[in-house]
Each structure stands twice: as C-alpha cells, then as structure tokens.
Length: 291
Image (cartoon, rainbow, N blue to C red; front, side):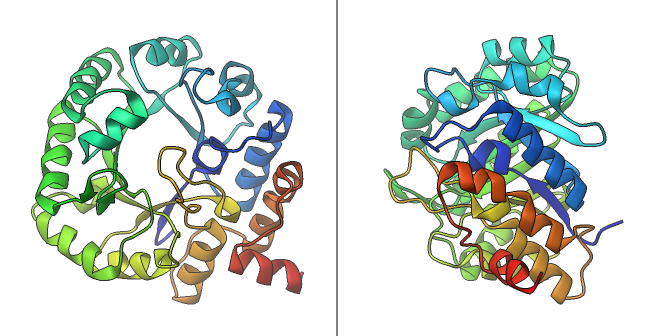
C-alpha cells in the first residue's frame, strides 16, 4: 500500500479550460500513460453540457476507450448528467459545490443550497461511489475570504447526503499552511480518511500546504500531471498542483506513492505538444532533464 493516495485529475480538471481541442484518442492515451506510471485513481472527464465545456463533450466516446486496470470517475453536474453516466455504467462520480454562493452561481447557476438539494436526489438514485467537491475553501474570487465554519457546514451537509469522500479545493490557490491548520481545527471530529485536499499552485504554495496537511494526519491529495488545469470561473487561477511535484516531495520525504516519476514526467508530453505548451512543473522538468 502507498503511504499517500493520489487522485489524478488532469484528464478532467486539467483539460476542461483549454481552448485547443484535444482528440479523444489522445486523451485515452494520456490516461493509459498515467496508469502505466502507477496512478490508479483517475478522474477522466465530466458529463457537463458540451455547450459549456466543449473540451469534455466527448465523454461518451472516451469512456469505452479507457484501458483496464484503472479506478475511473467522472464529474456529474446534475441529474441529466447522472443519466448519461449511468447509461455508460459509470461506478464512481463526483459532485461539485462550493463554500460560496457567488461561486456556485457563476459555475453551475445554483446556490450552494440548491446544489445540495440536487445532490441529495443524485445520491438517492446512484448506488456507486460518490465524491463531493467543496471549492473556494479559503477564498472566493467573487465573495472574498471564506470562514472555516462555512466550509464545515457544507461538508456536514454533504456527509448527511451520503457522499463517500470530500475533496476540499483551494480553487484560486491563495492558501498557506496556517489556513490549512485553521480549517483542520474546524474539521475536528471528522473521519480524516474521508478528506482529500485539492490545492492549486497559483502562488507557489501548494507543496507547502501538502506538507501541512501531511503533518496533520491527512494522506489523500488531488493533483494533475504537468500541473495542467485551472478554473474557468476564477480569473487568474493557476494550474493544479503538479502530480510530478507531489510525487517527488512525497518520495523524497520517505513516503511511497506507487508512482514512477520518470514515466509520469513523460506521460503528458503529447498533450502538452497538442496544447502548444512547454513543460513547466519543476519536478517534471528535472526528471526529463535527467532521463
């Protein structure tokens, strides 16, 4: 067993905001490369309307192409999305809300309360594994700072609905370790195994936040190969925590990840070429230079 658990989100969160269309076959190859590198849990796409996120409009074509051996999940924004997912036999889904009404209004055109009402119906109609995303855990680009108590309220509601785990997102990448500690204090009494941290690296603090979370006893993190991603609803939001950086930090700290860093560094190169982007993740660059 690995000492830390990594949920790879580059095929969904990493690509959703990219303007250059990535061929479905190349997405499938990325997922195969990630699997070969040792990443087992992969969020592969979303059943959001192609009108809003064209990049992920090929999920029905992508799903049958997924290589065996992975633990695959998709984002489901509403009941229509659930119907599409169930038609494909999807067994793990993710639901998206936030700690800020202003953010959910911009993102899914609902208040937080309205989103939770929809999620309760989805949970009752879906018997598989359900993750709940809570975005803007430290700050909202529209409403400002978020109180830890508000985050706890949303978490408690999601757990009442019956989600299996909660992913806590620093959506615009403002957080620092002290804020991780403050939120942890607010989470007193919760089962830590149900909490996953989702840090963005907009200001270069993602790894510092990982270190703080590890010190507090958490071991599950979302990350994205090559640091791909950002948030289409948060102006200036940088990419996700790079999986390469997370793997390097964990392994160098004596924690096993089950991931081959050299294979991982290569996994996203075809996608980066298509997107006309050079590698920028520091541990990826270092691995590529030494291979």
